[in-house]
Length: 124
Image (cartoon, rainbow, N blue to C red; front, side, top):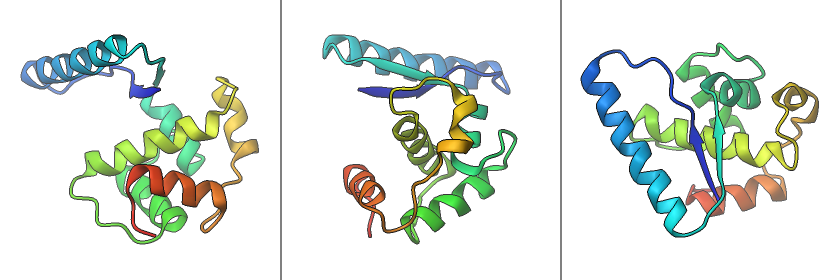
């Protein structure tokens, strides 16, 4: 399966074009492999990870460090990708993001966290 962020306002035309191209490649690749695609708003991802939809990038990264242990993300986009994967994992069969804070039960060291960390190639 593929989890991808929904398009949001780009800062400039060049960024919007690059974002559109990247999304196109991802969506085409998913379609060619007949993989289901799940899209999330950036606020959904932030809410799932931090409990607050307007959290800053550094707050999201701090929560990821708490859950998965210390990680050396090369860019903020790398931690965003891990946050997106965690958001999707937390969704389970529900697509109602209002349920996420009530269902947020992944703790550092749990089997679910270890399995997700391994799938994402994170160090433990």
